[in-house]
Image (cartoon, helix red, strand yellow):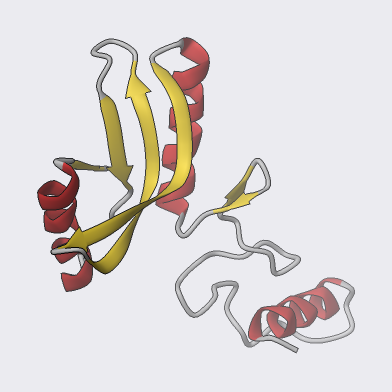
Length: 137
């Protein structure tokens, strides 16, 4: 039984009155809030997102797409990062779309307050290898 399943079972027993208050918080080890069934609240349209922030941005972009401000919304787009014919890494963009007002292709990453050294390097490689500036939201 995984940690999430154990937490969910503990809460179900509490809700049925079969046990006292749960000792495990309704948060997984990455700080993602869970519902009463122990499922991550970071899903939308059946898609599991890496964070609540990314899920919220997806929902915003879907509204913008419905309004016609954004076209061709794509999720989790892979970009190979090749230097001197050697594949160094792969950058996975959270979102890619066309801004309808400007016609520009936007590559976007939902970022929290902390940017890892690996992300910072991949951002520079995206500019060097593909000429793409990543929009951070």
